[in-house]
Length: 297
Image (tube, rainbow, N blue to C red):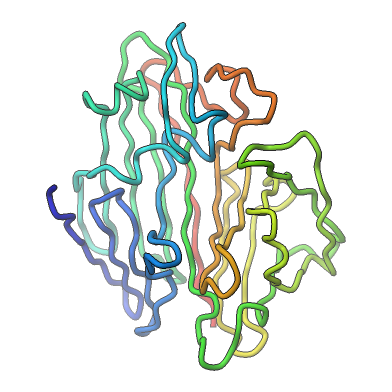
């Protein structure tokens, strides 16, 4: 196996590193402080994987297309594939992944996935562009992000439950969330109570896996320590859903996940074309979205 290449960019006190494996951002620092989860394999061995060509889990890990059945694991294959560097200039890095013999065995579509990381004054912007290079076939896909942030940032002085979620809308008293059963979207919805658009971060919130919200009316979220004032925020208005996730008590991280795609519903018939959140691109068309991470404190 070819060893992944690591690329670095800087913008003043900000610096980031991206691996060619999965085009995954593996470090995001401000004045030397690391904000990104450092992929402890004993807890969760990833930093910020890209979710493509599906987001979440398929029912029975399979989908059907054109009378054929295919196997695809949770969140797709892009996070485990080697990307090619397209461009490294100034404060940005761009990578590309295209279909090949291996991908076509599990995902029978031509595609070009381009990911660009740009250090902006307040943090990081991540751009996704999906092209359909096929002259005749529609491209059916989903795409999302899964960045994990260190939580707490100062573990010697604070804990996970010293942080506050803030959706930036004081009028919000509650927000609907999707309910997961065995990794699939259940028919029932729940409501998460908020206080002036805020909620104290508690481990028990994740007792049933991820929290999943519609990106409407929300499009912004900050997570900040009540003790140090440090934290991070994300603007994700280009996306349809947002997931929040951590892995068990004292995991040491929280993921803020903007998605254009979602896990299968419990009652899904398995057809990719009818999957909740699937995006259909005509031949020659493209899909562009971006999200921004702001480092706080």
